[in-house]
Length: 155
Image (cartoon, rainbow, N blue to C red):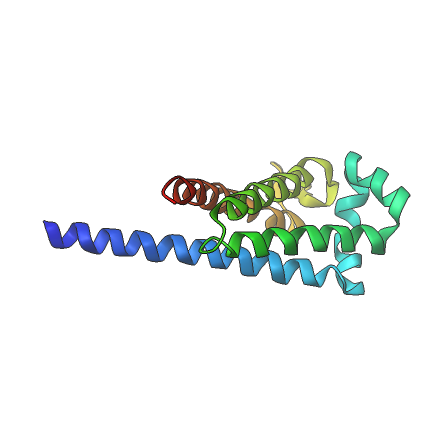
């Protein structure tokens, strides 16, 4: 029985590390893409349909807004990865990532292109399928925030 407990703890530790650094890599990579013109084109329907982002779009323009979003994502990813050195900062980055993911999920409600409604009951379109993955990333953000806060208590 003790061997199973040891194996379980090892798997848990490996799983948390995989979640943490996978989340950080996703945010860093996706954030960097916001500096590419094709990614500005890709997010246009999402931000234009959002009540909050449409106002920012009017004030900043597409390219600047995309870059602000990108920098925000990259900062969150960097903070998440800093857990071994700065658990409190990592928790902050994880909570920021949770906010980013919740915001992205809100696009499911504000973006008409997220749904295919011509097939009876509503089904996710390609855009909706892209957005729904953020449910998992939101969970990962919350788990890494909790783990970082627990690590901060033990230092």
